[in-house]
Length: 436
Image (tube, rainbow, N blue to C red; front, side):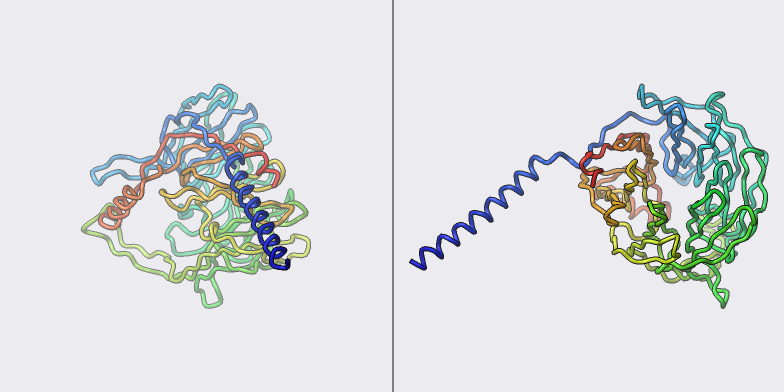
């Protein structure tokens, strides 16, 4: 009798397990896809590292970046002065009259009057959507080395602050702060940071103040080391003061505003640097045209730790790790959704599908979005509405065989160029995923 009862219990347990397994398979088979990826046509010009801004009329302004120019040494990257408009209502691209300057690692800001500022170390110009015209601002930004995210451009209403970076001879780190005032179209010195920095992150937290996080600076022995320090710069007084520290020293990381005076910090690297002399190359003069001294990394550790910084207490705490988001954040597309959740698209190579994560602000954790699509590295992504994200251009995705050939060519010739694309798409997220 006991054996029969035991056998019944075992059979009942097995039945329950099988039902659960079957239910899981049925769920996976019927569950709607996390995302949809739809083609919306082609840009007029293939480009990467470009910028996109939604205008007040709903059109999207797409500017600059780099294209490829055929030379006797093969294709070479070229900063672009071209720009175009995309009208999402009629799905049409309109080529604009060229900008006055080429812009590659630039920043783009929508002003209160609906105009758009386009700026980098090459110069500043303003786009007027009514006249459909770019006008050059006759000012000069103090020279810096044109390295992606080495210095920061941060918007405070109609003022843009330029902070830190590396001198154009690539030997010294800057502590300077300049302001471009769009209302007067002038640039002026606003003060200094407490320490020189490059690869830092700067974030406007009030109408008059900016928080500056990490980056690389000179230590007591005048060596370059990544720092944990956080300082607050006041645009009214031109003064800055150290207010706290991150838990992890980082450069080229990301800091994002969360509700309730909290900040999300992730990615980046911890690096120590040394100076190195590069001699003029006789064999390949197009690579090294003259002898120069530069700063190069000596030791590097990519960071996967994620921390939350509290502006009220000036303290930070770890909430976990995200291996998919570790390292330099220039490859990330970051979109703030309408419910304050943050969507991050990470493309570290040109072969594998992109990693898509949503940071849930209520749960303080990242949720991975199922993705089989190969989105594009160094494309430009912008939010059309809470579910639709417009993605344009970038570097073409390759097969593993194509990628191996490209890597071989890069090693042999030192010309590491990836083909660019004109392709554009709308990425739509399942609304159930956004609720997460």
